[in-house]
Image (cartoon, rainbow, N blue to C red):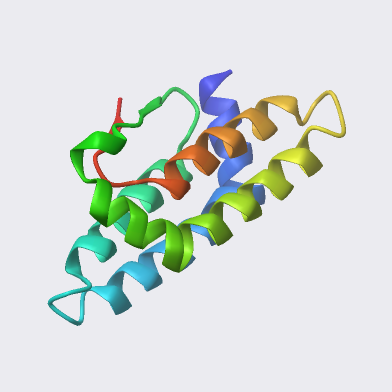
Length: 118
């Protein structure tokens, strides 16, 4: 199920999302101040490509200031986007596993600093 889910995810959601995260990461890495934020975009892009079989563990207390800056600038918008996408996926029974992945990505996109992906 993991392989089939990842392939379907990549075709319908993950490919374009990963491309946007990679482009945002490249743009953010142009400046010295943006490098930590660009690296978080690369972390999100890696998980967005193949989310099935991976878990994200959030640790807000590791980098609270960076997480607050991320939340204020982009995190809440990304989280709302994944919340809406997850809700749309969960309309059908077949889409529920994809909606669950969107909800996992919603948490990570809200506070990526200090998060571990296993």
